[in-house]
Image 1 (cartoon, rainbow, N blue to C red):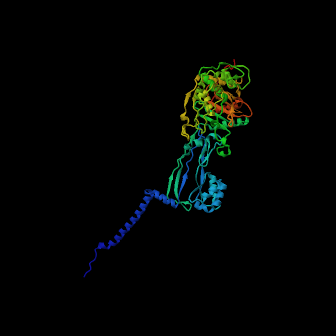
Image 2: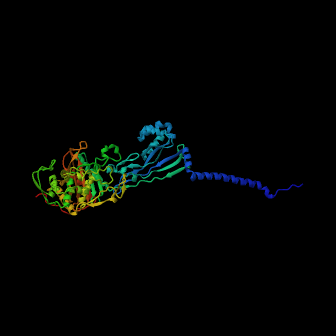
Image 3: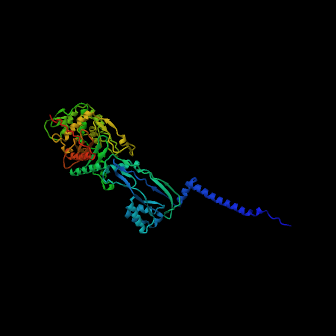
Length: 585
C-alpha cells in the first residue's frame, strides 16, 4: 500500500508550535517583571519600603539653611556658612568603637560615652556631630581614615555665624546645637528656621547602592529677618557707651537711637555685651537686653512728660513764675532738689533747665485728679512697646485708683514708677515729633513672634498726646538745659546744631531689699536738630561709682552718638538759634 505523505504545511507545524510556546513563556516572564515594577513604583510602596528597610534603608535629614538676620542696609548680624555633619555607619565602626570614640572626643569635642553608644548602635546611620565647620569635619574624617577607622562620612549641615560679633548680640541672640536659645534667633525661629527635608536610600557594605530605592524631600530654607538697625551706628553707639561705662566705673549702661519720624530703632545698645559666636563665655545676666528687660525709675527725664501735660492743659507756660523754697514739706516726707539753695525764683523753663524737683511738684499741683496718669499712659508708660524683644518688661505705672497726692508728687519728678529704656525713648520722641507718639519698631516690614504677636514697621501706629504748640514750647524749654549759662548739661551740646534735652538722676532700687540701695542711675534724653528733629537719643548709665550726674556722665555720650548719627545721615545744621527763654525772675 502506498503511504500517504502529510501535507507540506504540516512539516512546519512543530517548529511554529515551539515558537509560539516560546513567545508565551517570554510574555509570562515580562508580565511578572512588569507586575513587580508596578508594585515597586506605585501600587505597594509601603510594603516595599518595609522590605527595603530590612535590607538597609537609611533616612538622612537635609537641613534647611537658616534665614539671615540683617540690618536695614542688608548687612548681616547673623548668617549661615558652609558646614558639615559627621555621621557614622555602626556596622563599620562597631569593631573599633572605643578607639574611634576617643579619637572623636579629642578632635570634635563630643562626649565620649554617647558617641561610643552611637558607634555601636544597631543601625546603618548615626549622627556623631552637627554643624561642624567644613574644613574641620573634612580634616577629622580624613585623619580617621588615615588611622584605619572606617564608617565615618560627612553631609551638608550649615553652621550659624555672627560676622558682627558682639554688635547687637543682646538683641540678635544665638543658636545652640539643636535649637535657638536667645534673642531674635528664638523669637523669630519659625520664620528663620525653614523646614528640613529628608532623603531615604539603600546602603550596603557602608556605601549607598547606586540603583537602590531613593526618595528625596527637598528642604525649604528659612526667610531672612531684616531689622531697622544700622549696623555701623549700632557699632559706634556700643563703642562710645562701653567707654563711658568703663570711665564712670559703672555697672552697665544702654542707649537707644530712634528715627524721629518713623519710630524706627537705629541703635539699641547694651553694655556689657558678648560675642554671639561664643556666648558661653559671658555671664548669663549679660545675654539679654537690659534696655528692654530691666526696670528702673526714670528720674528727672520724666519731668518732660509732666510739664508737657501741664502745657497741653494750659496750666503753665514756659514763663510761669514759681517760688521755690529750700525744701517742700509734704504729708509723708520733705522733697528736696539735687542742689542746695535758699528760696529761689524760677520760671517753668528754669525748673527744667535746673531740674528742680520742688518747682515741678508745685507746678503739678495744678493737675486735676487722674490727669497726669492719663497723659503718662498716652505717652506709653506702663505698657510694653511690643517691638519684638522677648522678655520685655512693661514697667510699673501705679493704677489710677491707687494714686494719692504723695504718689503724684513723686511721679511728677520721676520716682515711684518704673520704665524700660524703649518706653522712655519713645516718650521723649513724642515731643520731638510735634506731640504725636509714633510706636517704635525694630523689624522692617512684618514678622510674627513665637507667641503670635505681629511686629514691625507695617504695624506702626500714631496717636496725638499733646498739641503741636505744647510740644514746641517744651522743646524750647529743653534747649535751655544744654545752655552753659542756664542749664546743667552743656556737655550734651552738639557743635553746629541746636539740641533739646533733659538730664535724669534717679535712686536705684536694689533687687535684694526692694528699697533704695544707695546707688544711682544717670541719664540724658534729647533730640536734634531741635527745630526740625531727625533723631532722638536716650542714654542711661547705671551706678557710676566715679560720681557725676546725667549732664556730666550721660550728656557727653549723647553728644558723641548724636553727632555721629547726624553726620552719617548727612543732616545739615538748620541755622536756627537756641531758645533764650528766661529761667529766673
